[in-house]
Length: 304
Image 1 (cartoon, rainbow, N blue to C red):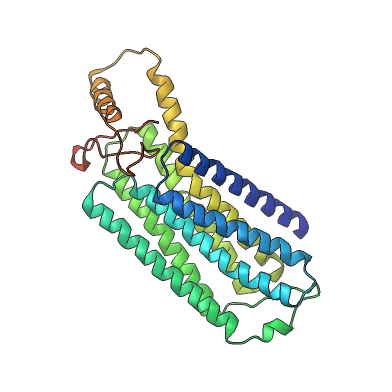
Image 2: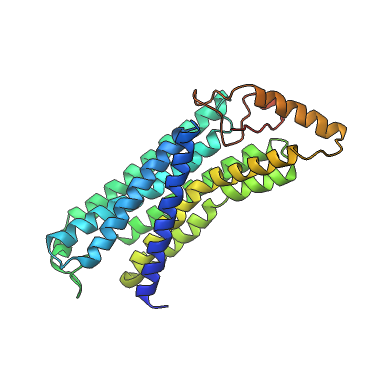
């Protein structure tokens, strides 16, 4: 597929991811379920929009100062969006167990660690781009400029990507494996959370392009990573929302109820009658353990 077509596809994917995020945030605000994970989603949305504008502008520029500004903006908007997505996914998981003090502190510690890693990445990029400005004077035939990261910096960035995504997946697996979820619900939530692996795969592809200095497709790789990451950011909200709709419809259908189903539904009904106070404003779209406690090992589902 020609590079122009690939750029168009990546741009379309970015626009779709932006629209999905806007719909997600509108839904959260309308239902009064806006929380920390949504704040990070807003940050990711702003960064993706900024990178999209800078990327499109770089193709229209004739070079000079405008091309340099576009590169600087894109260079920092890209990692900012990726790490904001990770924070959003982390707090989506943390929302499940926020009432448990030890796990809450664990999530906060991980979030602070992510901020430190992000700061280190941004600092090294700023130094790499700024300590030697010769690349200002060597644009390509289209007038665009580019500064490559060193191999150690690429390796460090790839390691932080893989480790951070692995931490999120491991935290989700540890949490969900310790709770008595029905099989269908477990599959849905694990599928949503494990999409961090997809982001890791795209990160590896982008790192290969940086190593080999495939300048022609490096921008395509970063645009693709932005689109996939922002889409992943919304999957947990979307899957839990769809799951609630399915469960609500199942409740409306009269079915024979076994003793185990009766017990589970009684606990769920009790949780639904009690207000979800995690964010102080309304009920949650993710799984809420506040009504039963961590030790009960019983899953409840909040409902709008």
